[in-house]
Every structure is written in structure tokens, then in C-alpha cells.
Image (cartoon, rainbow, N blue to C red; front, side, top):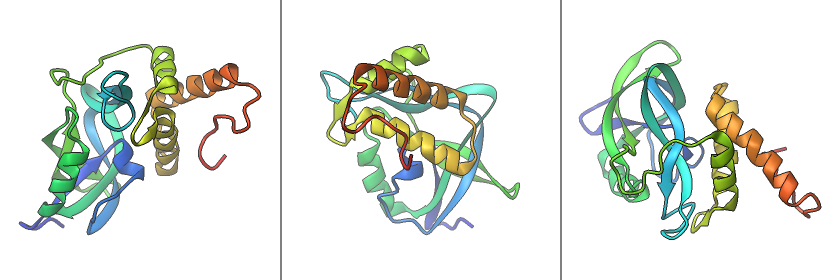
Length: 189
């Protein structure tokens, strides 16, 4: 249910697993015609201006479906979310589909190719190497990727792009430091 005082927001990246804002309701949802891609730079959370990390954005892709989490929020929450998603993301209207088959109008933050932090397409192996070496004020970029992959598994979502980057990241982490005290692993593994 949406009222004049509330709106649904769709999370497809860290908003799935890091809901650091007040919400009234939370439900798994999907958006159709969009694909999640690690094509956005992160200068403020998972990297720095000199060495940006990589985070996800949505790209239009006919026939694609992107699973995530929808939150019903009050409008005052946008002050926090706009600050959190400030590095190239814009609020865009979108239709959310819930598991019960109902749909509702909502909003999503998308970092379009014209934004200043956009890094663009790259092969999954290149993205994995980039993620492995990136660190920002919110922590290692690999933590973002691994938490996202785990959250998608918990949703029962199959995202070949994310899971391939995760597979390559874990292999690179093991190759770089095979005797590490704390090897790079999936959360909860």
C-alpha cells in the first residue's frame, strides 16, 4: 500500500543488505527490463576520488529482470538516501513487481552513463581485479560484492554477472595471498 505520505523505493545493490534508514515495510521485488551491472564508480564509499571502487547500477536491457528489495518509506527518508546515493545516482520512476504478482509504481536510484563517476562496461575478470584492489571510507570494495552476492542468494535470485565477478574475485584473492590469516570468503561461509 502506498499513500501520499509514503513511496516504494527499490534497492538492487547495498540497499538490499544495508538498510540504514527507517522503513515502514520491506518486500522482495523485481523490476523488468533492467539488468544489474558493476559499471558505476564509487569515489565516496568503496573507493576514493583517486582510486574509485566499482558498484552496481541498472542498465536498460529488454527481457531482463533484476531482483532486489523494495522498501515503503516516508518522504523524509530521501534526505538520507539522496546523500547516500549522491555519487552519480538519480531517482527514477520504476514499476515494481512483487512475488504475489502485484505491481506498483516506485522509485529507484540509477547511475546513468552520463554521470561523472560512470566507469562503464568491462569484462568480469577486470571488474573482479578492480574490486579486489579498491577500498574506501565504507570499507573494502570486495565486501560490497560479497555481501551483494550473498543477499541475492538469500532472495533466490540468479544474477550471472554478479556471481561470475564473485567467482573470479574469490579465485584472485586466493592466488594473491594463499597463506592469508583470513582468506577472502563469502559471508557466512
